Image (cartoon, rainbow, N blue to C red; front, side, top):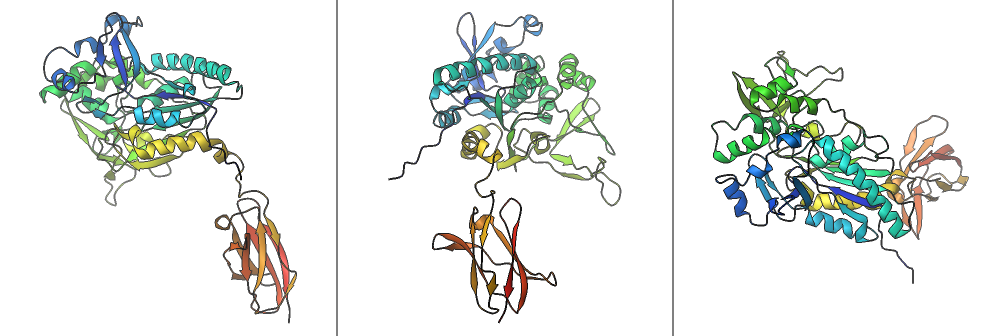
Length: 452
């Protein structure tokens, strides 16, 4: 009986959550500050009491003297914040990854203090990822094992920032991002500027967010400010007028994206999403539409000259145009941002990349040398068979051409016959014909003569 091996990866995997996706505790007392099991805490925190006060970033923390708050793990229970809606736990994703690696110890859950700057957390991620890989190589004996980073939302920005640290991604084979706002999200600006006079939960979020570097790191860097006949980028001065920190915005806008190795991106689509901002008389308005560019980089316009505005969509938080990375192909799924990493589609996507990334990037089983066997002389009007090997029926393309005139006379479909891949051909008249078969590599051709 044939032995079929269960497919696993021997790489080390690091799971990096999004903003508000890590449990935070008071380092001195151990009191949980974020990520509590009781959902009623969020109702009270955003409506009354002082439960959010310990989450505010202190002057010492802004100066880099951190440690007051400790990240202890990924979200294990749902969490909630106004504007940002709900955050689902990462339990299902992590459990699925653990079943896909050679041993559960190959998986590291990288929790971080999401209140602090992306640059700060990226340095911690770089150190933790390298240490995790070395530990896994030692434990497994697989010195050829490398790193795979699986990141949701802001976690992808940490990976991107890590790519700018010398040597930090030398051992990274693949990066998988889920709903990462590579160019930011208009919603971050709305959080900073639209809390005045609104419902209490939104005001409380604004009061907290205006001092959080992590929120400023999510500000949109794409052209999102609609000025009627033109569109421009948000500036640090704009952020300051909204009530945020111009200094934190400036630091966020100065970050330079870096390409990620083996990058595979999953993005949320089909959800109404804030994409565009208007600054009107000191107030902030937001809209769900976005813009399109012509190949020359100019904004596309209506026949009358007005800017073309189209429904932006996205995952409810990250606009589609921001989630699509510059140097990778994105796979879409109709899903909301907070639950994207928990969705069945995302889990399947991550598992497929872990198991098949090398196969996808390497030689394909059907793209090798195509073998072609056929008779050299046949009778016109009588069916005969060509046999192919090195290719599957759905991968092969066959064309029969009159070699004298160049006219295509047939496109026969390859099919399975008695265990072989075969092509049934009938030539219409006496003559010499060219049979051409391709299967991903160079096409193979052979001439055949039809005679009475």
